[in-house]
Amino acid sequence: MTEAIKMSSFDDLVSVDEEDLKQALGLEIDDDGNFYDPLAKDLDNDGIPDRYDNDFKDSDYFESTYDVEDNLHAREEKPSILGQISKFKSEEEKDKNQEKSEKGQER
Image (cartoon, rainbow, N blue to C red; front, side):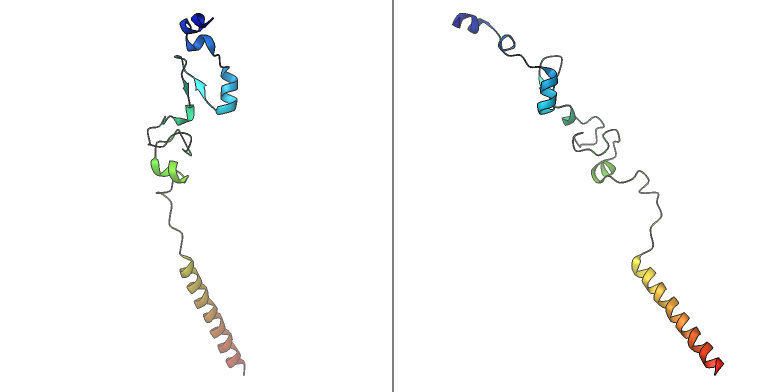
């Protein structure tokens, strides 16, 4: 029996079911019988393994890393909040001044 074990290969002694391997570890078996992680590849050549790539079909590094929209560079800039606040304050002051002037004219 020891001679049979010495003469046999690893594949003769161990068998792995591909479905069980995929469910348990997320690994697949290639044509040569090697285990590999299909998400460890970088199919779009952006330098990010597909496991961590938000869009593994898009090769834009910035969009893949930060999960932003495709039209990020084409969008108009939003007005600043401070600018909106100061505009609102000035409109409120104008309204108060108009009310005061109207009250002064009524008297």
